Image (cartoon, rainbow, N blue to C red; front, side, top):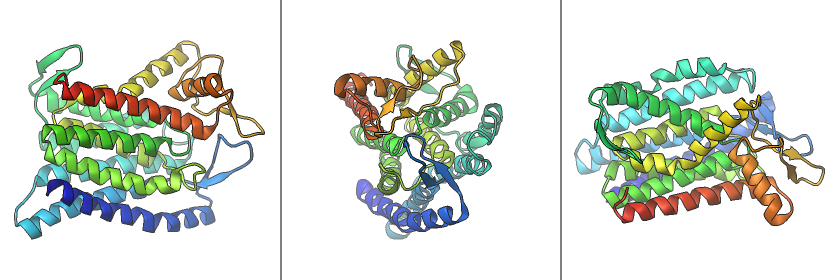
Length: 338
């Protein structure tokens, strides 16, 4: 019944996204709230910040999930965790939307983003979510005591929100990666009997699927930072609530690689952009001599394997990488390693 409730309430979120998104795209285009699609050779403008409705859909889905238990089963169901998840989602999305309104490269400076994102984890801190004993890859089990809710949780939420925002800039990439993270998290939660994590990941997955219908190549709407901050913070929250840090960090491996490549760029004096260099025929060239992002790696792989790189091909390459990571992680979980 837990999965059934999640699917039914998640479908409500899916419906909200698919109903509201077309109207948002129309209004955004009329009001000039648009951004240039950087991987297209011609001038293409797309509605901005449509990902906010995926977040709204997930919030309504979560609240409806609690309502189903309250009115049908007559019980309160993990209300503190659900309200913490919805509050955290809205806080992260609000910050991202402010950044979107101020404009790309004109929004909040990086240090201000970090400063303002620090309180996002407060809903989890308030309810003292998670367990202080955590299992980490290559380290083992450690007990952080009060440092877990007061220090580790805020750092994890802040880090995941910023990291998820780093692998971006291609039609369908952010939504596709978010969808895969939620799908693999739901499978792991089912295996381990983590009912709330299973339900919360399914609810978000359906909202992301609704948004992906409009964001897939060729995108009619961009997700915006309101989307990436919200999904990244939400993923970290599920990891905390499920006490599954080893799984969560391992599934997030591509984002650690992205961070390493980003640092490589800084060491070479490059503050990287993810976009490729579009050619008149619609194919992409690498933007730099070296790879400073997973997206650059995907462009190089595409050119070696196919002789050319396309935006859709780059996205499919990265999504395939994430699927492979997910399969390996689930296999390790089945073997009892995670």
